[in-house]
Amino acid sequence: MKRLIFLGPPGAGKGTQAKLLADTTGIAHISTGEMLRSAITSGTTLGKKAQTYVDMGELVPDDLLLDLLLARLRESDAKNGWILDGFPRNASQAAFLDKLLIEINQACDYAINLEVPERVLMDRLLVRGRKDDNPETIRRRLEVYHEHTAPVLDFYLQEGNLKSVNGDRPLEEVNKSLQEIVNGDSRE
Image 1 (tube, helix red, strand yellow):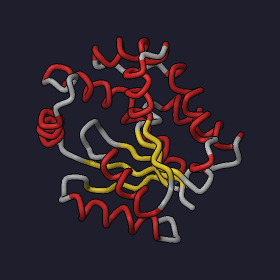
Image 2 (cartoon, rainbow, N blue to C red):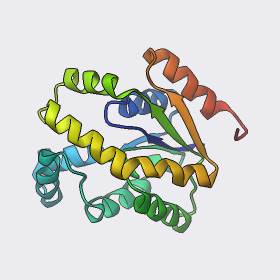
Image 3 (cartoon, helix red, strand yellow):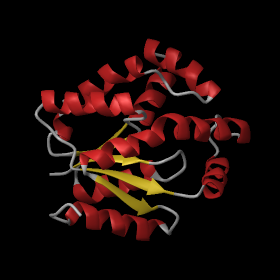
């Protein structure tokens, strides 16, 4: 049973790699982005609030995510492990998640950072074709990532469970590196 957090900038491949790893290991892939997109598509109150932030390229506020995440971690498929994709996005969320996991008697095994150069991220995001993926919004999302999310790496580095993986390689090679981390028994 593994509990993993996938970190990295927009376009690093977190969702793709998390899904692949979840499929091969049988643990739950929990994507806050997918949870939010579903809420937006469904037109829920949370979805309507989130849409305004997404349209501006801003992060959805913590209070809109926390209850959603707690409920998801308590679902039966998450009892055997999980890959958290898209959360935490800032140091305060990382600290909150740490406390939340203690409350529900769980712990994160590794926070895995997918490293990809910015020029590659821009290319990937423009090709992806979501309606909010245009050069101006992408640049803003990368700025937001560097301001708010990059400090999360320091949080997990201090916790002693940060692993970095070169995400600027073919899909299979990145996945192989992730498999090695999941199957390894010791922290490096």
